[in-house]
Image 1: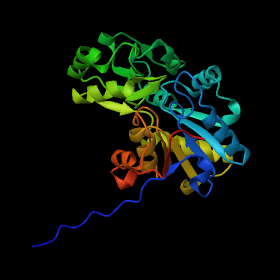
Image 2 (image 1 turned 180 degrees about the horizontal axis):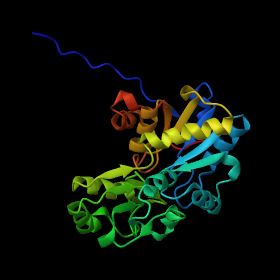
Image 3 (image 1 turned 90 degrees about the vertical axis):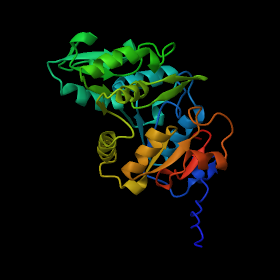
Image 4 (image 1 turned 180 degrees about the vertical axis):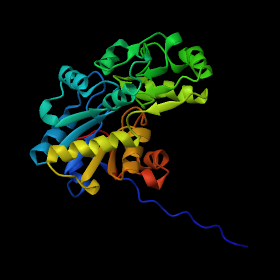
Length: 290
């Protein structure tokens, strides 16, 4: 009788109290915003301090966000929340990437599915915003009211779009985000429901390749030369966006345990359950960037 082959033992993911304990320094950080730098309401001072120190030591911080708005709008939001500008060099958002996708529908009617606060993503684009019945494409930046609605509230609307074979551009692949002490749905949750109904979706943002290509170009400009991928570190709280996206792009990552995936204490056992696939395991995990 053949003995079963034992599965190789994976090294535990170290849990760090300080990013300084990670090991050899990098040249650049690709740092997520919501869940790492703030929770939508209050800033995380330790994260800002860590970014400031990294920049003072010669590092570059590119905030890489799935926010469905242009980077200028996100910078204004960070100012309001209280994230100091000394904590970052530049911002790149999925809203920036989405504008390129939406722009391919020049002169055609676009249905804007999302809250009014995301309207800046359409500024200056050669498209016409329309109602649902006239639209040639759906631009989904989120739910109309993510404080009270869920994706179930959109079943009938999405079914009608799917029956007409209307494509969707998803400007934020995140499924959920932590706002204060609550979890709210994002555009990615709407897009996932649309795909279940047979709808076609194009994604802008993490974990998809185009936004990382833009990020590497931005880092090369910021540092006046290309940055080798082994000199870049991704920092984020989203497993399917930040951590998976980094792995696909060939860069190492650190997982920040926000309420999206970790409801209580961060443990090695819990991390093994969150990251069963060795291909996307982060270098380390932290309760918060510090």
